[in-house]
Image (tube, rainbow, N blue to C red; front, side, top):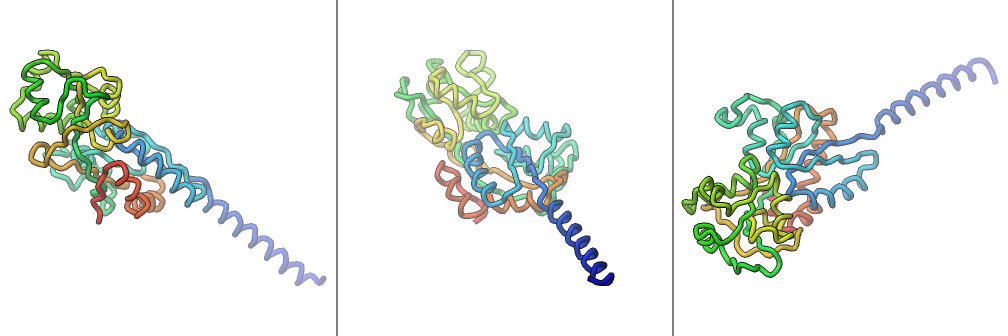
Length: 274
């Protein structure tokens, strides 16, 4: 083999090594961090397996909690690529394009052009197995609270499900502070805590999401109307602090796919992107 051929072969080897190194860099494993409302735990856990199977090298890492807690963690510097809240308020508080009356701190975390209304849920009145107090409607709940003969579990005021409950109280003219003082209310820091209180029959009923009632096999005796508490909308967005924008966008698109829609519908969510 002459010197020219040897030089060409060496050059080709160098090029191959460079291309291989570039491919290895491209294939570097990625952890995509998704902050999501606690009420999405079951559905998103199921969808994680599907997405990861279709995207080798990508691992979805979830942080499930109340939307208010997640918003505070993001504001305080937590790493997060995608945020899904159980109400517009917490997303608005991170969105520079939102009403300044809501985003009072002028926070700017939402990657503009990525925010969508992903899902709608329902606010449900759920009871323990056997429904010992025979509660069959929000009207019955209101009367029982006024009479002081039942115990209701609800979310804290900084939790979306608690805020929806407060709207229901306002609709019926109930005074939450007076009810709390009379001992007919207990609280949970997120919807899962409220659901657990109902599941364990520690309370007579609880106001939770229809999807959480389904996942916990609880009986729903009534659901709130739009007039009672408004729409229960779950916005989702890629955050501008993401280090993996393309993958974050792709995952958000996956959550609007037919596959994801089927999982969401199965537990009672209504996709809103159609």
